[in-house]
Image (tube, rainbow, N blue to C red):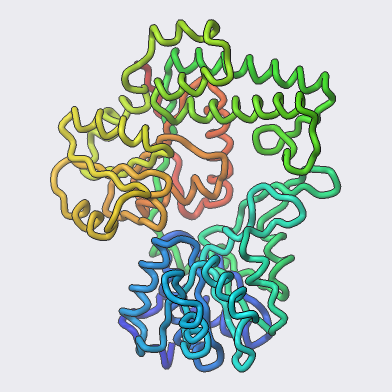
Length: 473
């Protein structure tokens, strides 16, 4: 790209995306770019910003503090004139933020900080400039479950400008759906349909359009679903399912609609309920949540939660066979015996601690990154330099914006119910072996099979499925 000076040269597919994006902007369109994990969205942001800074004042919106820090550092390292960049931080005064809006070519911000600045300055953006907003992971502006207002806060404020605001959206995937309550019904709507509603004149650049050019640069993820036989888990799952069916029957007698949406419920916030109805629906929601815990937490934590909704006499005998380590945890020693460097993704901190305890007892070097971890970059640098058999365990918050291509194996300990999120987790290691743990003969088995089938259909350029593994302890 002529006129863009930095230390990187665009790959052929990146050249095409840059050219098409610039052309769409000339036509008055707002481009939304789908580019798979690890294919250079941050570099595209750098090149586009450098190319467009003479025509627009640019605001780059990141959706997490970790991403803000890492992207700010990257942009400052590679931007031709560092004094053109400003960081809209909640730590600086509103007067200084207003100054940055008026003086800097490129502003980098979290969405809430930008919205707060808009509120305090009393106007959207200074009217003497053309403004371009680049939204990273633009799919995240959509709420997973919503009423007619499906935008996450504070995006209604950010996108409500009366100015001729131009937008570039970027995302690793634009292929998911969300639930919308519309005219008393819970409907499934594609993320893209909602994005088109709030971003006028949008034009989508799909990953499929660049597949031939991206092939040399894609590292395939080899997926193996692991079915784990665990009688204790199956027994608890059966108790929970029995309770769920009993509550559903009671709800039916009250005439409460039970849908097929999240947790099998219509969103409670939109319907007035009697006290009895609220108690039933709260219990049902709680049971669904505990069922999720069953497949993801240490056994003792599961039972503590279960005591809050089920009579103790019904589950007292479960303590007798309480496993010290879950079978999923024990499976790691077998699955990763050939791996030198492994990444293990867990949803809950208590599970992180259990996995760390088990693998440390087997002689592994273990590092942990959670939302509480300070100086993540230094920690990652240390982890990457380790030799011998070692692993890093990441919590849900800890894994955000972390890529570890050096790992030869990745494990998803428990799967969420969103296809996009599971796929993004799979790509943390940017290829190599990926194991998805599943308790067989439970509702988790059905869920994971369904999610993996959708991943296979939506991201076939990036994943290879191999034969399932069956373990019985």
